[in-house]
Amino acid sequence: MAPETEFLFTTHINLQPAIDGGPTPAGHMLTVYVTGGSFEGPGLRGKVLAGGGDWLRLRADGSGAIDVRIWLETDDGARIYMTYGGRLVVPPDLLAQAMDFDHAQAVDPSLYYFRTQPLFETGHPAYQHLNNLVAIATGRVGHGGVTYDVYAVK
Image (tube, rainbow, N blue to C red; front, side):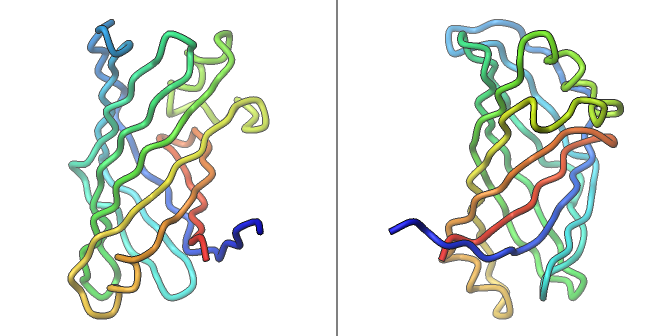
């Protein structure tokens, strides 16, 4: 049986330009820090706090291995730790443009694959149901960062 999903929220995460760590045995390392953002969905909305980031590895096959850790803060003051891995697969001729977060919206999202698996942790009673969810998200780049549509897997 195929899994069903339920829309949780859309988030836009503002990003600084990537810090290029260069090639390593595990891949070409890039670190991208979060400067803020927002999220909104049914029963869940607020801001993305500055200070998180993505410890991205560009692998030998050209795909990006995503490793993100960020904090969400809801409008009612709850803090939710959101972590996710995933893949960003962009054709080599579009990679530089896709990594220019301020202008990457010019790259049609149908030309690349951008999927993640968010997990959540919080102690706030109103949002503890998130602690037991597995989520999936579809991403797109541009407008100063990345935007995800996040879905709970039922």
